[in-house]
Image (spheres, rainbow, N blue to C red):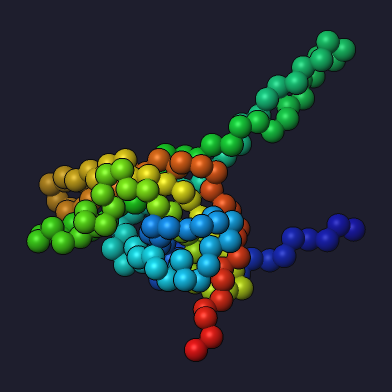
Length: 163
């Protein structure tokens, strides 16, 4: 008999997930605690998000000897991605941090900043700071990002430095 997959410990993302803007990371596959701590926590002002996942295409590998066309993994792409923040009436908000064309890393710690968990590190460039204008909604700023190279996924979160 096959072994069942481990049952998940389900959780609610709000209040758990951390998202950071980190200006510099030497190795996206192994960020240091100092690099992470030098980042800016964004989750407290994040009102919405979109994208932030990778997908893989397939390439057909037809052979004359069969009517079936098998496929092999092809290119890896990242979805168009954005973070939407609350705008401040005094303009002292995300606009001063995530300026157009800024390069850095968006780090996702889905289960929180817990060293036994993993994170995803997205190398990005800010492409826009769009003001979201709606009649009956609080003012927001949508920052859009281009993913500039393959994200490092399921990277170990480093432990905090010993006191």
